[in-house]
Amino acid sequence: MISINPKDLTTAKLHSYLLSSVAPRPIAFASTIDAEGNPNLSPFSYFNVFSTNPPILIFSPARRVRDNTVKHTLTNAEEVKEVVINVVNYDLVHQMSLTSTEYPEDVNEFDKAGLTMLPSEEVKPFRVAESPVQLECKVNDIVYLGKEGGAGNLIICEVVKFHVAEEVLNGDGSINQEALDLVARAGGSFYSRAKKGFFQIPKPLKTMGIGVDAMPEEVRNSMILTGNNLGMLANVEALPSKEEVNSFINHISERYPDIKNTSHRKKHKLAQNYLSYGDVESAWKLLLS
Image (tube, rainbow, N blue to C red; front, side, top):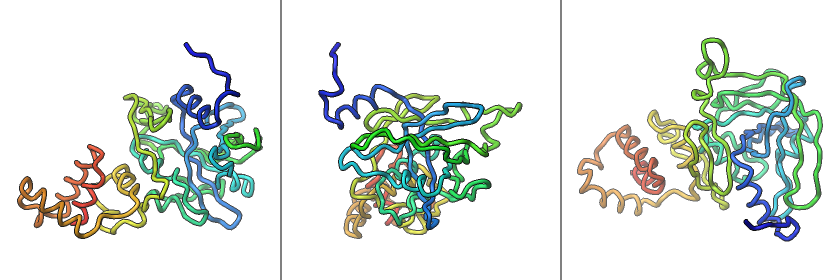
């Protein structure tokens, strides 16, 4: 066993050790709003419940390690002391991951991830309609833990109302954990599915994915592709060119002789199959054919 003094490590290395060791961690999918009414949505795994009476949640948008800047969520919580914490289940995990992309301040992550803004009842920030549990909160306090990159900022929230989807409830009104199907964050690109264990999701592109809002309408409104499928497709820097699409279709025409004349529905099902293997590029070429 090696022994490590945190002071001997770079902040980035220490960050990696801590996140890989203290895992899996629940995810706060935090919806906030700035003073001008612009919505923001971002996930945080420095998060947990700390009190029942009063009902207190705490999450921490840490200062960025690489350049010591702060996140929009923190500045929004300082301006408008309200937040909605949405839980993340497996059905929306790819869309959640996409919102961690550092889009400019005026970009709406709900649109980029293809998620639905649902008005809250007690606070200004929107709920994520696709989340099975949504907790409306007032920000009671913010505790600043430091001024250097990697320093946490504890946003202490009091739950004033929460909403639970009926499909995750047992007959007695309690929450069915298997139906809820929560996911949690671990180190690197690893996540954990509560009922199945670890899996991986590629990190959003640093160059920024196109987002669900930039997809062709027939893809964005597909009756076949799921939210997770859309989240994967949205995490590309650019769509393939017409030449790349034609080359791909010619290549697979031996295996699928009717591919050029097949219906959108069949193409979407085949694209979904490519996505199940993580082949986003082939899925896009098929969808654009």
